Length: 173
Image (cartoon, rainbow, N blue to C red):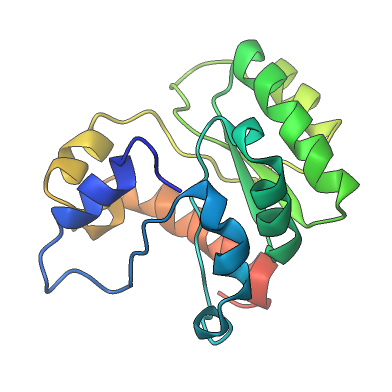
């Protein structure tokens, strides 16, 4: 579900020693087959990075939503991005799926209370967001995630977000 191949290209840059999961690039039209594939039943965690234009295949998107244990709706802390993300959260709520907004590309010293209030009125907002850091792109050039760079300032926020996700999914860290 990576029509721009961003994740696929990043994944191809990873070294064999850093690859710790399987990557299955598929088209949105294959979503039904994905969620019905018995090989995925044993997976503890399956991350699906959906394309921005989810309206292109509503049936496939519905299958993914219904199969999800937790949906994260990434949103930059701007009114325009909130206006775009809120309908998707409403759709997740209509299907009664657990979901939360995650603020990303958060700039330092920016007042986000109005946007957080807009989002919170529709669905929960994760207490941990991700800052706007150039180092995400630098790490990505090497096929790495920011959390894989020792002693980087951003590791704490990534780990905090992952801890929250883990507790939501499994009740543990």
